[in-house]
Length: 110
Image (tube, rainbow, N blue to C red; front, top):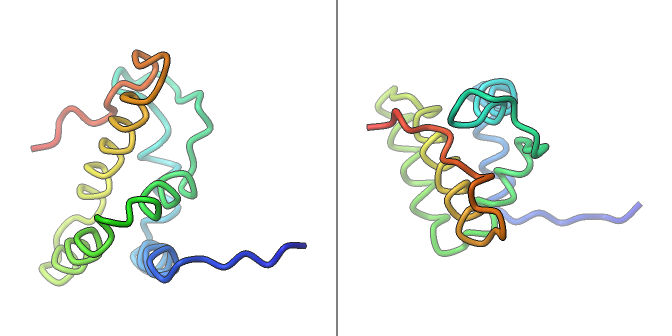
């Protein structure tokens, strides 16, 4: 078995989401359906979202700082996670041959 080394950010965000009890809700709530409520057929998982965030090197400090601020103020970290999920879908949409397949899932965010 290959020994995989994860970035410090990936380890931090995974630990943060696990400690806050959000990790399991990513798949059960956030990535289960699309913008129209239809079942998600893209096999998106918590790891997919974490991998996407880990690849966004220039935003990692801002993402971490925002999560820490929200948590410190007893805010809703899931709301911010939905915002980040929208960003992932927007990126997938912009690089896909079939952009209509990647509708932004959370159109109700303010």
